[in-house]
Image (cartoon, one colour):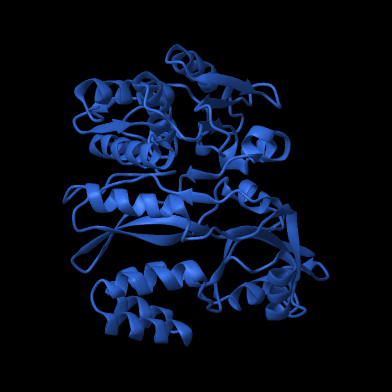
Length: 449
């Protein structure tokens, strides 16, 4: 069976364009419209579908291609919601789904409606092909990922036995092309950082602004923030990143792999990255994968109509990202110890999820590795950590391993295309076709009889 044909390409582009045209900006979401668009397409191909709507308009689609086997299914997962797009800051309308040249423009084209389109077409193609399967294939196209997943995968993971019973899931967050020296690697996300958002509060007596004092709430807060330096808190090497760097280094020589392992064991992560083969710029960028981090993002004190009043309270809000293994209480205690009695540090609105790691030696990862070796001559697959957070956080604690793998080739020279959450978000069409080819092969090898 031919997998990548002109007809398949046309259908992929049409499907993704239609999904982009459905405005699912979250909030409010309106993902139900996308779910209702997809359901009849899949049903026509012989795929079972159902729509789950725990809140009005917050619809998620569950599609299942049955095999007749009792083996646990493979789940493909993607989210239907997108972040906001200010049309005045875009060169093309963000919800027009325009195709111009080699690109498809629009909010969600890379995050994450391309995964939904690819996955839906894989299920339709498998259903029509009649290929025997040894396990079912599921698609979960869900709501609310961009706001934490409460009405999407979070709800399903808590309440839906079908989702809870899968063998593993393929998700966003990995599949990127990683160039190290002259060698190309593709990442499989086997770990992701957690989130811990905090609010810091400094208090002091108010007073007249003509008489500044060292104990002013604003000064206390400023001194506390200054103790963060560049926001990287310590160094820790998780299993995924240790394996990633030693694997990459090992493709050059056994000696290089041994040197990298020694550097990692001593916490010299930037030197380890450079010894692996990364450029100094790449090493600096990837330092976040070896540290808990914290970024101050919102400050509030006083009022512009009272510029001559020393505020009695100053607050700042922080986005914290945690490596697997760090806890909410442990992170907040570290911050409080760092800032002493300058401020009080509290969790903001229960906004915490732990960092998580799935086994990197799982059978699905072996299949991905084989497919990359076969389809991308000279390239290798490596485990990797995502610096952000995905819907995997709802599944891994419930015993479902999740692997980020949306395969994407390097962009052509001179092209710097805008991706997730950026203005002018667009997808190189060759990567839409490439992602489909690779994932179709992964699914048929893992699920085929």
